Image (cartoon, rainbow, N blue to C red; front, side, top):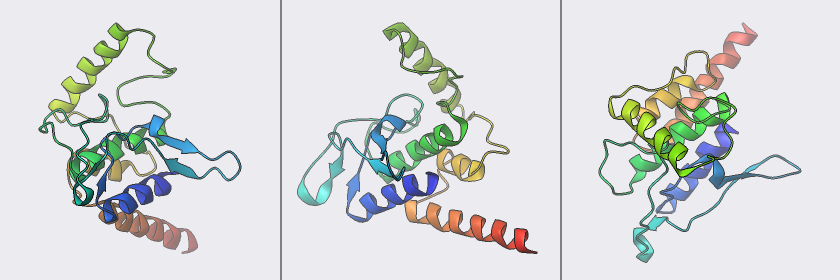
Length: 166
């Protein structure tokens, strides 16, 4: 699923689209083949056709240190949190069970907590998680494109495969 999420972002970016609101809720899982489907492009930006989305990702999926514009970097930071959620089973700094927020206060408290950590460059521990290094590099702005993330994923999977056959 991680690969499919990264591929989806690489594809839309190759078409000039910035999603602007990446979060787990905006990925659907197909019921028969379990493929991920990226959805909810309502706040997206596409300069080529003059669409200027005005949506920003939810707390936990947005870098509180960035300005309030949507860029490739916005989507890549959000992708780090999406990947973290896929492999950990919960949002950054939100412990399970963590279904829907039950109140506005709960959502605001979460936003304050996660933004406090993220604004200081303090991210959840990803040691031992599948794609943990990739997640951290997304959060630390080490990638300039989703294709770069795919290349790193390919290299790490190839390296892991080679070490298994040795």
